[in-house]
Image 1 (cartoon, rainbow, N blue to C red):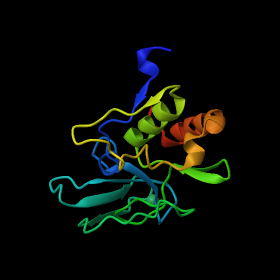
Image 2 (cartoon, rainbow, N blue to C red):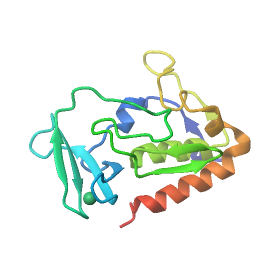
Image 3 (spheres, helix red, strand yellow):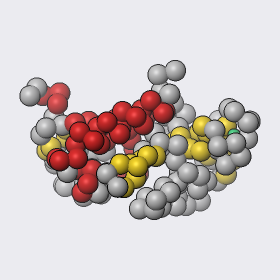
Length: 162
Ligand SMILES: [Zn+2]
């Protein structure tokens, strides 16, 4: 077990990692054509967020007033427009979903890691980190293989390689 296989629950904050960026947008289901849509900071005005679908051309903008989370629901949504997440599949009788690539990377490295350690942050233990808020079925050792497989399926669905 090398150092690279260790996962540290360090400084990642769940709100930071799930916030879309231009390079790593939140992937959602287009409400108009059910194609792959993206939510990202609006060009030229990062105070706004934008939704865009390259299949049907639907485009929307809005001020991100408050972010709405429905993470426990069976239909998790992006937190700005309320659109269903693209990366969302059944797993272990629950729903496995991720917002974007960074979120996927974090979950994948966490689930794959043999040693799960927590690094103490500058301000003490970070209970709000995304890892400590994961539902037990994701962190359960007995589900590891199934969850890893489901994450790989999600990765294919994301088309990140293209
Ligand atoms: Zn569309």
